[in-house]
Structure formats: structure tokens, C-alpha cells
Length: 133
Ligand code: ZN
Image (cartoon, rainbow, N blue to C red; front, top):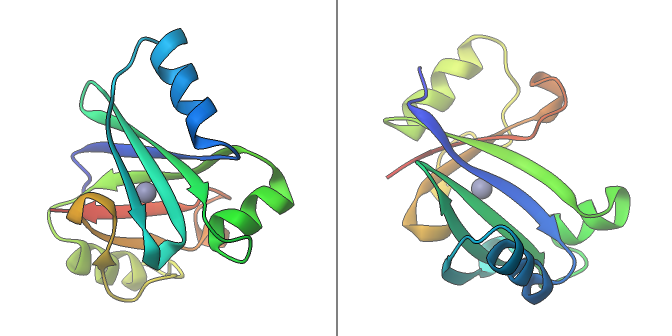
């Protein structure tokens, strides 16, 4: 398993519209997609920076993963996602090296990507996502 690049950085925000304004008006990036991912109880907004995206995540349900994260830790960086060739193979490979997985199998994420999360207790506190097309 070797990631080709950082696919995106996921950032939990309390107010998506205000955060989009900051990324557009202050950083000068263009929001090219807003998408609700019902599965994860979030509304997402995407910006491209080189090969890497910024994925803003606003919770649509206080009981969802982002709702709970913001309640516990406040807004901020939520996860880092690495691009790999094949998520299922990569998940198996890292599990064999002793990493605890949140997802044993890839599942559908935003933008139709196949995604899987590694548990932060195995990744030095960083919630880590692997994703492939
Ligand atoms: Zn993500």
C-alpha cells in the first residue's frame, strides 16, 4: 500500500455557508461542489488546491459523526484522506500490519469515491481515510 497523494483534508465546521465564504473570499478558492452524504449525516463542500481537496463537513444531525466530533472537540481538522489504487486491498494490507480499522470494507463516500477509515488509536491520533475511484 502506497498512497499517491493526499486526496483531501476533511474539516468539521459548524456553519457550512460561513466556512465556504472564508475559503472563497479570503483564500480565493472556488467551491466546485456541495453534496449531502446522508449515510454520514453531513453536508460537504469541496475546494481544489493542487491535487488535494479541502472537504468541509457540516453535520446534519447532532448524533452523526461530525455532530459528535464538534460537540467534543469543536470545529477543526477532522481527518486526512490518502488516495490509493484500491481501498479494499489497502484496508486488508494495513490491517495485516496491526492497524485497527473502522471500516473492514470500503463504502461509498462523497463524490462517488470508495472510502474506508482507520482508527485514530492506531494512527497517532489522526483519523485516517483511504479512498479510491
Ligand atoms: Zn473524507
